[in-house]
Length: 414
Image 1 (spheres, one colour):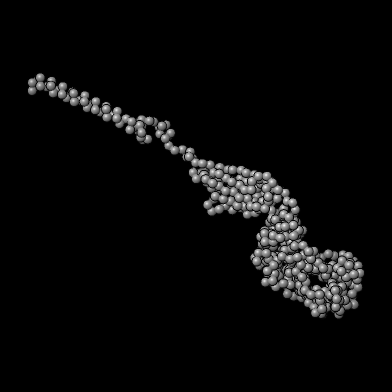
Image 2 (cartoon, rainbow, N blue to C red):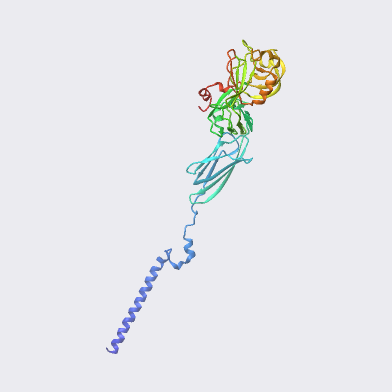
């Protein structure tokens, strides 16, 4: 090939390389903006890539917590309610000024919570709600409210006393200072637990004093050794019209003693103490005089209290001036005034005639022995042809004179 030809070919190749370089540069210039839009491009550096990521919770709204009641001196008697919008409740704590807590339950979806008990009158409450957003952010919300004082307070007198040991017929008895119209609401707050799942029922009565009363008795006499607990969670419960509010809870525990039954046969003028199915002693007695207001009651009476030496005045039981004397070894059986006691003035009648003013009398020696054997809660099963009738449920502890079905019907929850 000639020198001229070689030079021409070299120029052609050179021009080709220049055009290729220009095209490559132009192409790179066109592609550069596209590379800048890619999050995987290395040209922007690691900081720029981090800025482009969505931060956790950046778009989340806080959970809105609502607590009711709210404010100062709000009416008592309503449960505390907590709701959450935009998230869920993880825990709720409601505490009064004395550190007592209101337990409650959350809904299955975690959006609401309601206290088991109602807000009590004259109390200050603090509500702490722990929440979590849908994105997982946790937060605590705190709220407070106070309730108005009660215009009227209802109180309770109850038996038996705490830590006592009682007989197999002892009921649990609550007598209220003021009327109870909301019997259903009150009865719902009363809980009985026993060591052996004893079956029993509440029954509403009118006490001998005229006040409202509710008793719990087992279906049958208690089993010896049974341990019993009453929890009356009444604080914050409204008694109803003219009754006022309960402003405290009540609790008592007791144990059932030996299986003792006192059988009184007024026709044979005899008292028999039976323990664990065996006769311990028979005692000659004299019951109430037949034919008038001095007759004794029959049926099952329960020993209410051992009162020792007391003054007995017939005028207090509407028997005129028949007697007014100090009486030893007095054991109360009814509110209307029937006792078992020492009656040495009637010694000639023991075992052969009923000549008392309604009580069951015996000698000093027998009364002293018997007084030491029995305990409150022991049943006295009294029989006799000429009596005033059966002991009423509210006259002492006469609930045992009703059948089990009759007693169950006296519950406000039946």
